[in-house]
Image (cartoon, rainbow, N blue to C red; front, side, top):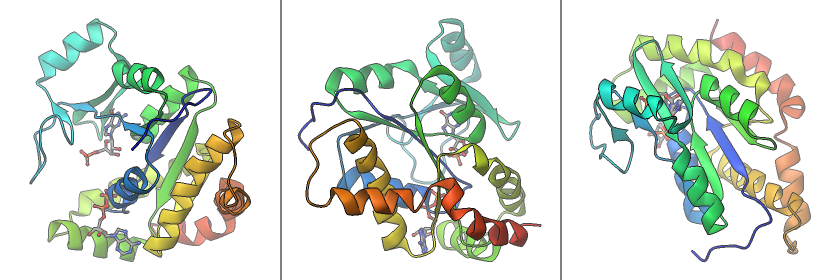
Length: 226
Ligand code: ADP
Ligand code: 5GP
């Protein structure tokens, strides 16, 4: 994918409860839109399944994570679910800026709050499943089992949606994927990149996902988690 000359690096934050389809949507975004540096987080948790060190996460010991904290190497960090530390290394932002690309952060609600406080003009997207029942189905599809704790965590996490610029309801995959792509492309248009013939449609699609625009659809989803 060729690098783009951009006036500034857009920082795109994506958060979602586990199982809502975030990895699927992010993978499509990276492939279909490109021009993005994906920040690989550091975590103190153990790898799951097929996860690879340096690809999915940098898996480090607690002592190493704390040493990085001491050296002020993190843009943000959080103790997620009160169990493990997760952090975003500052070097991914440096890398994105140096290569003229946008930065994509897959982080939780606490991390998103810290990045917004540190960097102006971030673009944040919260991905919601269409219902608790559908989230259960997807967790089953992904992991072969549903862990009740994950559903409880999802119910807590989704309370944080209102702080995000966009809320993407991942019902029909193709549509949700087009919407996420459009949000990133629309941010580039705002940065005055030359627009193509598709630019107005892209802006329209992105605007349709503004948090205020989907508020009415969000409430019935939240009800299914009560
Ligand atoms: P996450 O990264 O949020 O944990 P995944 O991207 O791994 O979630 O998706 C969880 C499961 O749900 C996968 O099996 C994926 O193929 C499926 N999935 C994702 N989006 C949709 C969708 N819109 N409709 C149906 N199934 C989906
Ligand atoms: P998992 O352990 O299921 O991969 O991720 C658990 C949660 O941690 C997810 O909500 C994910 O977005 C979040 N997460 C992953 N990396 C980071 C990070 O670097 N910082 C923060 N704050 N959260 C992260």
